[in-house]
Amino acid sequence: MKVLVPVKRVIDYNVKARVKADQTGIELANVKMSMNPFDEISVEEALRLREAGIAEEVVAVSIGEQKCQETIRTALAMGADRGIHVLHDGETEPLAVAKILRALAEKEEPKVIILGKQAIDDDCNQTGQMLAALLGWGQATFISRLEIAGDTVSATREVDGGLQNIELALPVILTTDLRLNEPRYASLPNIMKAKRKPIDQYTPEDLEVDPAPRLRVLRVVEPPGREAGVKVETVTELVDKLRNDAKVI
Ligand code: AMP
Image 1 (tube, rainbow, N blue to C red):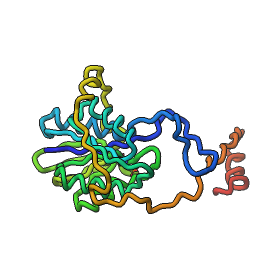
Image 2 (cartoon, helix red, strand yellow):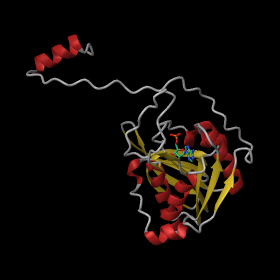
Image 3 (tube, rainbow, N blue to C red):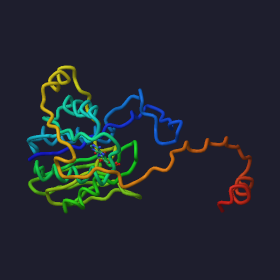
Image 4 (cartoon, protein in one colour):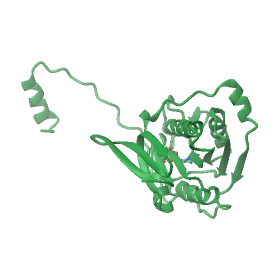
C-alpha cells in the first residue's frame, strides 16, 4: 500500500508574521520557512504505518516554488521514500492544490492520503475535505488516533465538545491533529541519505490543472493591538462592567 503525504512550505511557526508595507500580503523575503507543523505529524504517521508493515511506500508531495524541494527533502530525511514536486510560482489556493493532488492520486494510486488539518499560513482547513470530495473517498479529519487493519480504517477525531470514533473503508483521506503523534527529528545520516532519494517534477499543466487563483486579496492589515486589561475588586463590579462597558450581558 502506498501513502501520499502532501507537505506545504510555510513561514516558520516561530517567526512573527509582518504585513508588507503595501498591504498586499505577508513579508516573505529573508524569512525562515519550514514544513507546515501538521504536515510533519502526517509524515510521522505515514512512516509509522510503513514501520508497522501496513504501508510499503511513503511519497511526499509539495506544490509551489522551486524551494519547496527543501520541504520535500525534510520529509525524505525523516524517512519518506521519494518525493513529487509540482512547480508553481505564485499563490496555491486549496482548490487548485486539491485538483493537483487528485491528478497525482489517479497517477500514483495510493490507498491513503494524509494531509495536515490546516496550513498555518492561510489557516484554510479546506484542502483535505476538497480532495475527498473530488476523489469521492471517505474522510477522517482532525484525527488523534489511527488504526488500519485490512481494508478498515478506525480513527478518533477531535471535534468540538469531545472525541468521535469512526470507521471507514480504504481508500481514505486523513487530516492530522496535534495529538496524533510526536514527529521525529531527522538524523544526520538520514539527512545525507535523503540527498540521493528521487524527486519527480511536474507542472500543473502536465497534470491538466489550472492553478490560477479564484480569490482576489484586496488588502492585508495587522490586527488591532490589544488593549490593557483591568482588575476588578468584586463580582458586582465585574457584572457591571460586562453589562455597561463591554455590553456582552
Ligand atoms: P489548508 O487547506 O490550506 O489549510 O491546508 C491543509 C493541508 O493541505 C496542509 O496541511 C497540507 O497537507 C496540504 N497542502 C495545502 N497546500 C499545499 C501545498 N501547496 N503543497 C502541499 N500540500 C499542501
